[in-house]
Image (cartoon, rainbow, N blue to C red):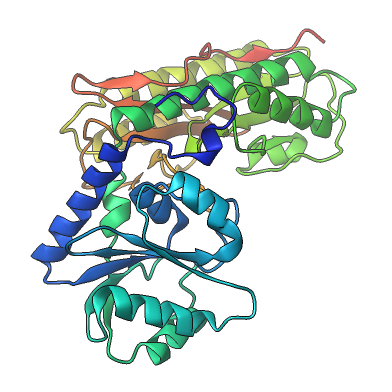
Length: 384
């Protein structure tokens, strides 16, 4: 589906057949588990299953997927415009401010599934708080709820070609952001100015996500997930920069290390060693390979070169359709990981040593992998 027109955010992001295929896979699992339906509360699940998207997804909304038939959406009435234009399934119920939302939700479930249905529920969704669970349990005494066990989130790990196309577009926005960081960072410039340049470049390049991603210098460059401040960059500083844009909330991201004005031979050698470790790890990535294999190459390579005393962080994590506050999908590579790579999976894979970080977003292909982020794999040294 063409995403270049100005109103692409007010219609489904994919063709209807793609949504029908997703729902069919969920329903097959529901029937196999002897369930009457699914109550999906994660915003990513709602959008992935139905197309419905609103920026107001933090309000009380969910989708019912019956074991047979079409899904139906429950949401706030002010989202009606986007519901009408983005959802590929017509059935819905809306609530208004001042309504008893739990009572409305219970009536909706009863109408769609009956009053004694056995349903899977996304208990791990951040919207499914303990208070909401207790309120819905009281409002639906005859409904038997059980954990969905990652039903939708697991299916979402393997992306369709149309989904990966959006992630390629996000990768181009990420590269525009890094270009802006490279052009703006200099002695006397603040982190905030660099962040503003990154955000502007990524949005103009197609990103719908406003944040620049982790960005930090000085002491904070030695630690993950730093945010920009008013700190002034000085010659010789290390600036840790990760661009994290998204197109239709499909993410791609990558990290580079930026040296302000100059870099020592030792620093260049360190970054070359880090890149060599990542190259070796990625060379092992292919369908059917256990995640522990490249994960061990990362860890052993860094430790054997004396670049770190220990290595505790994950080396791969799945990325795709993610809406704040969610920053990554559930699949991760760490010591002991037993899952295997499959075509269509997409990962952010990164390596860290001291204040130096390097990462890419990759898509698993039948033959190996495709690097979605194609920025030059080198230390960035600014001219001033």
